[in-house]
Amino acid sequence: MLENDDTPADCEARHDADASVSERDEWFDAGGANAPAGERDALDDVLDVSTLMSTFAAQRFQRVERLRRDAMVEADRFRGATTEIVWRSLRLELAAALQVTENTAERMLVTADGLVNRYPTMLDALSHARTTERHAEAFVELVDTVEPELREKVVPAAVELAVTHAVGTFRRELRRLVDTVRAATVAERHAEAVRKRRVVVEPGEDGMGWLGVHASMVKITAIHNRATATAKILATRDGEERTVDELRADVVVDLLVDGDVPTHPGAARGIRATVAVTVPVLSLLDDEHAGTEPAVVEGVGPIPIAEARELCGGAEGWMRVLIHPETGMVLSVGRDLYRPPKPLQRLVRWRAERCSGPGCAIPAARCQIDHQIAWEDGGRTELTNLTPLCVGHHTVKHHGGWRVTQVEGSGGVIEWLSPGGRRFLVQPERTVPMFRPAPDPTYRGDAPF
Image 1 (cartoon, rainbow, N blue to C red):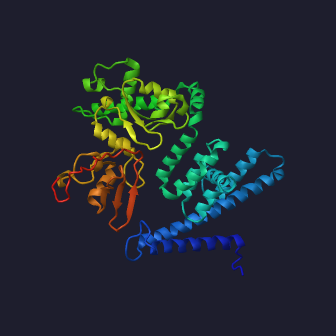
Image 2 (cartoon, rainbow, N blue to C red):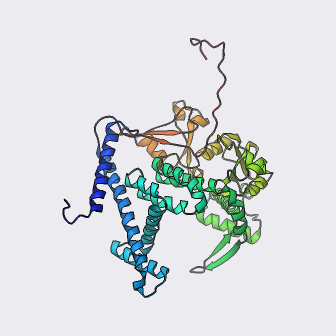
């Protein structure tokens, strides 16, 4: 019997939510990976509510899509209004009813359409609280950029990423997956896009203005890196009161107006753009493999393999990183081209790409290099004991009661053990091979090393 005017769909939603909570309880009782030993605590209650939120988010997306479908069917009552007008009207009504912005309402409509009509497996994962609403939004946004004929190569792996990764990491990994699948067409798309390069001037207020350069993201990144490095050197001068943002803007203006700035100190004048380029070695060497996996510029994304070959062929200021296309093993990191910070720091940051705090997205370039085993406690300055941490996570690690270690033999996996006993693993963005000497046949177990 239905009570309180409940619809069958409402009862189904409540049943799914109760089942999800039950599954969550069973998971904790069975000793899930992040469940501490002992009794449930307040965080478990938060997780239960999060489970309900995911389940009901899926139900809401289904109802939003039904609303959109009904509105399109009934478009005739708007006296021949176009689909665009119907869409705008629906977006306005949904936003007003939910007391959100029209942009938020439009995102909800687009996500609902994608989950219900194109990606039912992702909707199912959300319905069973195996992922979150934010994952679902990012999923539709990124997978929709893939050509329809290529989506079947993306969707199953993308759902698995959504189930197993925090939303920030999920977005990065999904973008990488999409880029890899679309690698065969990246050169053609880039060639079309590069013809649209231009410079735009936009007046601002109080005598200020904006200068916009639409060009290859590789070159834009190199410009920004050079301006930032120069600004940081200028910031160390006695009496300098400008912020890094102010200095960076002044550096760009000085270089564009004057070409060279004699007033800059020698260390700043010698700076050149530095960008890391990661290239699957077989793609670099022959055309047969050029479309199998993209070359990637750190902080930018995929670039045509022809451009990667040009950069790796001798252009100064580029850190070349060659990787095996199947194992991800690093074959070369171009040590002769490294600039400060020292080569080991560069490799540590390259491996992680971002702060190694759980779910943190702060770029490694803005992080501190942390010794998992502190220097004063005998920790070594080596790859197996180093990882980048942002200031906030560095502080939490040392003063928040957490135990942070690098999993032995993992190639950079960082384990965080919370004060409450929960365990979190943070995977590095890239794989670095671990080399060990072959066993010594003359070694005896009771002999000293």
